[in-house]
Image (cartoon, rainbow over all chains, first blue to last red; front, side, top):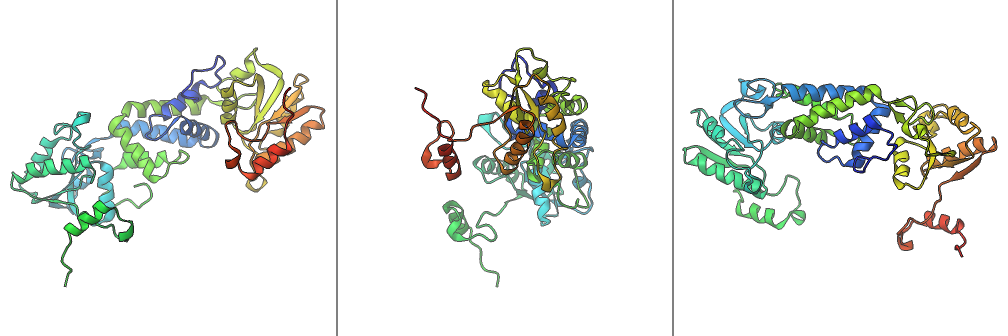
Length: 208
Length: 208
């Protein structure tokens, strides 16, 4: 429906427009978009109107936190404003989704810096695009003692962590990286060789 | 993000609301909704605004064709208004998506009736919900000669076709059903036994 030339008697102007518009969602192809459009019109017009309002409102008000660069509606996000977080720890993540995943663990009480990406020279994403200057200023505020690099363990995420780590270390900051190893609940038989090799190299003394 | 209690310092009001609103889309769970919301805010705010407009507009203007019951913005849909379609053939489908699939084949020149569902007594969907009275009136307009039942080949679709077929036959109309059999390009080795049995029972003489 979305990816063909309209028939001479194309029946569905607005529905077709909606189907096309739904393609802006990541992972939504022509078939899924058509299914979504028909579902909303047949079963959930109130949901469609609510979604429209949420989209308009979010596109209007959401900006980046001046301090940690994550999405927020205010100059400073709620995490950066909070007095219950430890300002001596700064966790560097690629995206707000990663930030939310770490918050979800409830195992971290420090603050964040969101790169909104990762170094990827082939895609034209260099230190400027991930706002490295802002991160260096943020980390050098005199309060931050440790920077925890929590970029992904992909090639680009590792390269980003390495690059940022070097810059931070020359400024005398303590820099750490999330531990790699066998996942909790993992069985050695099913762990890939790279992960297992890393877990061996980074083995830890048993707590006595 | 969508399915947990907000943390005391929940950072993302509008983004959270958008993530929740995206859940109204079929097949979109909490993770996908979060990914969509973040993607739109980070990479495609214009797309988000365009989608909002398309949703609002579609929810406002889309109604059902008075004649064939499909989605349209006008009292009569473009297909029903067309003078190039054969009014003696009426194809009964479950949904507008099925109508579009048949149009896509370019193998049918007649008109349609869209049930907007299928008989499903357990879900409270009876003859009234699929607008059987309207279909019977439509098929009895004196111009329709043949009704082609193109409901799905599921249990409910088959039952619906059987039920409608009986009603139409008692009114003296020619009623047909889409052919079942081996798919075009299909290999017998990989066709399920039910389909193969049906293809045997409904075998056709070779054209000479």
